[in-house]
Length: 261
Image (cartoon, rainbow, N blue to C red; front, top):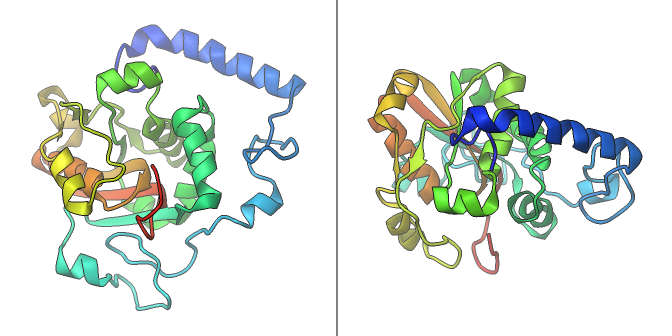
């Protein structure tokens, strides 16, 4: 569990600092392998050939949900889905599409004890969401339920949000949001099923409301599918007085079929 996930922070920081130093020392002796199992890389990232397979969203995207457009439709353009059903958050950006190439490194962060990958993904988000980062006052990760956090030992969204906030000079709010009930996994659920699953699941604790009130919050997560989780978090932040909530993720799903997150 990360010291900066909002639980037991003061007691975990020395241990985490020692762990970070130990990891850096090991990296000098045993250079990290590439995420795809290829040759060692300087920063434990992706070799050139693997980078070329990832579909980074460098072109025009929907301002509302970050979905890629086939052509530039002008500043602030929104897709049909966002026009038909406005989101609880103001805007969203994703660094890349969630496909076979991007799935492996993201799942390594989430399930394979690789929190060090969070810094790499923070760089991706900082580039893809530079307009939202420039407007933000604070960064907050999508929270895990305490039971899941104890099992996983760290919140993958927090491992991305923390280095992003540090590099951009933004306030980091690791526990501005809590997940007050354990929800089922979103995998395999329809859009409406996902919204029902997270309905009322998030809140801003009373003691954290002063840190949220009046601020423009950039919400960070690893993957966006339908946006149901992000919307649940955005509603809670706005109810606590946030002036605006935007969302930035490592990857977004283009088609739900056949993808497990």
